[in-house]
Image 1 (spheres, rainbow, N blue to C red):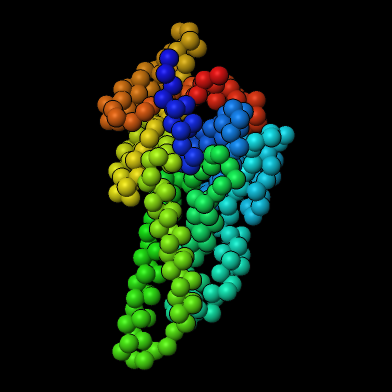
Image 2 (cartoon, one colour; image 1 turned 90 degrees about the horizontal axis):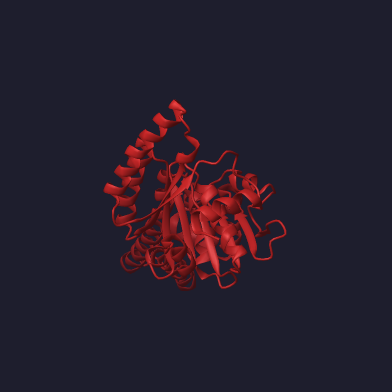
Length: 305
């Protein structure tokens, strides 16, 4: 039987997993990265959610600054981007342009509330030029925060473009002198962010996948996310419906039967509301999901042997 989810992850380099908080995004991202690694793909999993979930699910510390080898897996590494630590990376990389930033934009640019997000996304953007790995799996923050992050390259690129334009116009009117090299460097920065925007929406290399539960609130948030992502030119490729109660465990248990009946109602709604998006169900497991063995069990449910 054809497994469309498997086709998606094997045909794209950049794989994004998003959704409402608590639906299992990290589980599905880690499952996917582990499955790809087991099948010979050199894989990097990157968490953009500033929590310890990725480290917890693999049972080891995964660095916020350096790519970390995961377990004894030959092909699997991880990075847990932390916005505060990313600030240091961001400022170091821009060290040669810091004076230019202060001159052009004012010193407040690098102390605004969104600076940490800019820094985190700056680190995130760098992976669109990755040539080291066959696959890059992104475990994103909960939906609302993810959408804000995804808007960052649009906003930041536009901000740089407007500031360069304004400063050039001022120089013509007021005789303001600016450093052409610094402007050229900033234009390179704009090009990096423009490249990331193109990469996010390029269906030949990227696939955005949403995880949800067969419940009312996750379905509504998924519908909003599909619409909002479409506004960025990003098409959702698949829905992973997590924690579906297996029918073979019901055995006359009235509680489980009623719960599964409710899930069936929402599974039908998901099919009706998202008919053109690939869908895959993952059963509710009888144990916590962490560690390689259980991730591989989930992987067999999601992608096959």
